[in-house]
Amino acid sequence: MSTPNSPETPPAYDPYDHHAEPAALPWEMSVQLLGLMVVVLLLALLVAPLNDPFAPFREGRFAGHASAIVLTMAAAFAFAAFLLHAPARTWRLFWLVCACAFVFLALDELLLVREQVGAWLTGIPSRGAAGGSGQSNVIVSAYGAMALLFTALAIPEIRASKGVAVHLAVGMGFFVAHAVLRTFVAPSELRLVLEESCKVLANTCFALAMLAGLLSAAQHHAPARAVPPPALDFSPDAARVSLQK
Image 1: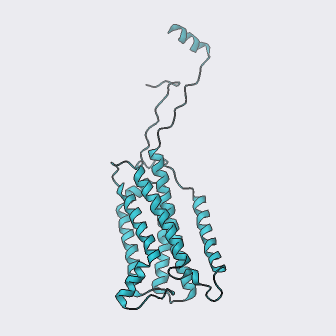
Image 2: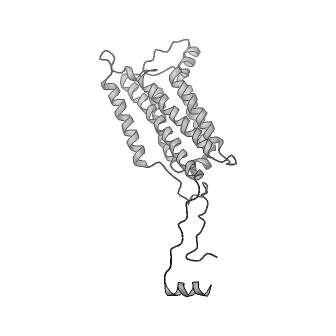
Image 3: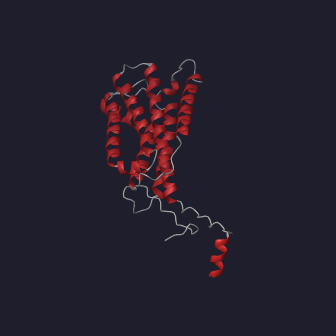
């Protein structure tokens, strides 16, 4: 039994204990980063060439490159979280699968894989304009369906990392808006801007989700907190106890 002045070993952090408080990405920072991304997208419109003011949002241009950058960051955060988690952790592979998926999606943005596949299936070359072929839209929808299925299977791991679920949900909301605009709204320059902006914001949220997971894994991996030494007691009672010993 411990006494009031005896040091106590702090309990180990259990990531599956929902009463524990793992490290989380502050919401203020997430909102600021999303706002910064919106400002960057608006600046892209302002610096676009006068003869094609929507050029930054066409396939393979600025918006696609921005998505590739944040997806690469998401892959790096997820892989770091995978390395930090203990090998015996049940859902540790969730982070490795996320890292691989984000690397693939980043390459997709840079190499226009889904557009090339859609053009090959339809025989219509991709022009990089607003919208894509029906096959390309099906591929985008398939990405979302697989992501939802995988997320549902990994709910225990997502819940164990504070902040990951909320960022993933917001990101999926932007992705759904992107898919709806791409599939059901008539092609136009306005739709192009909104569609690509939603995709960039969705990928930014996914990167923030992986960063939140990395922060949670880092806290779980951190050594136990140092216990301060017991306070000195100069009271007469303490002196008598010391003399008796």
